Image (cartoon, rainbow, N blue to C red; front, side):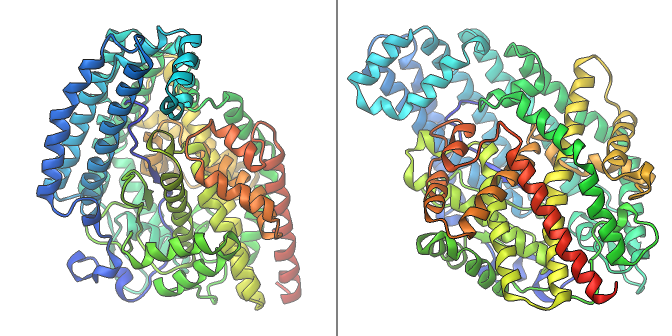
Length: 628
């Protein structure tokens, strides 16, 4: 897809929560009050308006041909082409947002699914039509590009884009090759699309009977809810049933993931990269060593993770910790339940260190229906923030179940939303879209502010213990678990690049091996039961091309930044807001350096491990006071 095409939906790991009363369990979307549903009419008032805008885009796309063969002739021609393509990309993103988010409301709705698929086809056509742009720019020497920018100041907006094209010269084909690569996108998302439809709309989710006699259909939202049950037998049954059913479809799910890896290898080879990892990371000029260092650092600090797991076992009061105990409430007597309104107030209070303007925009998100809050039948699972409708405002999808994790997810997605809002407000469209590598900094930064606020307001030992445990859960889920995923993703690509087949059984075997290493299975730290080998097939992130490692790197960056902001350092706070407003005006490593964090060394990771150990020290002191 052309670089100006912005479909920046940032996905979050699936939600965790326990049953809550009221609207949190409403399955009929029509019965949910409008105030808890996003208002997509801000993008287009009606489907007919969308259709007319789509038809206009389709009619306009062929006009880009008039610039073919002229880009080196003058600064005016180069500017005209870049502005026209940027305009088309902006309209395409707006149209895609409307179709995609309407479809996400109920993935069973064929009309919006068709609109979403139609935009995919238009995107392929668009990419093919503009395939000549980068090869033509590559034929222009650097001195001519610099002179064009000097002659036409409006080209300054595109300087970073032009520099990036020249940087990637060795990985850009001629016009014909670029057209073939663009045309390939028509089928490149096939594995992901099939997986999404299968898991969200057609997968035969199992039904289990819980200890209280209640029968529950374990769709993804229900699985996330009941895997955190306070009853251990229920947790064990839920895990065994859910992953056992996934195992029955390992052949299909394995074929889907294998097809996705093959897609990555196609682009790797088409772009002349040495590996799929290098191909994925080079888009944002991220050194592959950053990825490898993360995996190596986590591997070297598994003893710290195992300390947390042993602490969890101590708090739960069980002899042997199993994987199905990892989502259990640390203290079942502490009911950390929050209504949406309570979460809103806590989150707003926690964001006070970032200033009144930041807080005022987050209030608009609540008051002007930017958020789709509750789960409903057919709704896309998980949570995300979508800031790709540049001229409108960002949107957020949640599946709120009323637990602390849901409140934390709200803060997390507001971080993404605010980064999109500030970047779209501050940057022109061509530089407004920020790289995924920095996106998770904003989200995990907000989580850090939330936990700090909650701990300042609560003195009760049990509640503090629960909240501190939630913080450690964040590190477990964001640093260790996502790096576990990152290692799995790296390994399956390595295997495929060496010619090994990725069957469902092979993927099960590899996932079990990696998971047991991380959780200390052979050391007796946490027993990873055999059915967990199928968990990979439940993780949608493996279809997003080396995405997950960025959760971990971003968490370590945000930990370093948030500590300074919470300490009252106004200069750091200003640099952080500037960072949120910078969009994609520079490479992510440089953006973070300007904010005050160097991701090319291990210091951010080391600081995170030190903070993790400090939290565990405090928790152990509380436990000692309680005689636990």
